Length: 296
Image (cartoon, rainbow, N blue to C red; front, top):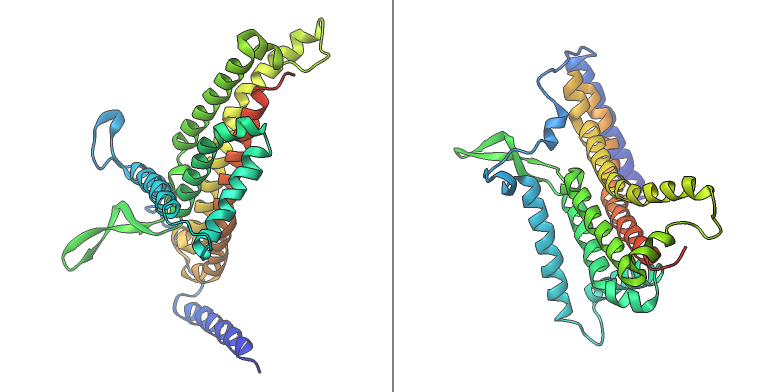
């Protein structure tokens, strides 16, 4: 028997043993837990109350994402070599993705050179915001644990992009950018005319015109909700599968069953969804910017 098969059988045996042990100790009895509210994991408690400029853990995560975006790119750009190492190779792959797939693939080259810094920064900032959302950090100030007499906030998973205000502000920046670019390139009247498809005349303008204007504003929703909903849903599923559902139902055995699923969902979200959602947001932004300078 190969070593891999032995390890897999050992894990399976341990899992079955754990199920049997929990059934013997707790059985199938349960008592619903009404105190634990899973939505409180996303509740924002102001650490420093300054009105609009209050500081909470969403601000902390945004600050961390901004620092990571700037520091890592500046650090790597100053250490580029003719013979790249593994880190530089990975960065060059990301650079090519942002330059060729996100920008050049959706707008003219001259425009791509102009908007590449913005779109690249947008992609990296959202990417880092999503990634650090899967790193347990001591940010849950509602629940604390005692360490040598010091009350430390409990570790929690949280992403700033799981708060709708953050994707909304990013979407507003993109919205203003492509409207401004369209008006700059075509003029106010030319830009409004470009919203209507070619060949639409007469009474159909009364129907198609308002629909096109509404669809332009719907881009705010398409950018905001897609990022917010995917990150929030992923975190909720991880919380439920990793023990939240067992706590709510008061059924300890259930947690042993759902934990492997929680681990798989965690790896899936970390490995694919975090990057994919950043890529989609930046790509749609590039499409909207590129489309704003074209007629009809």
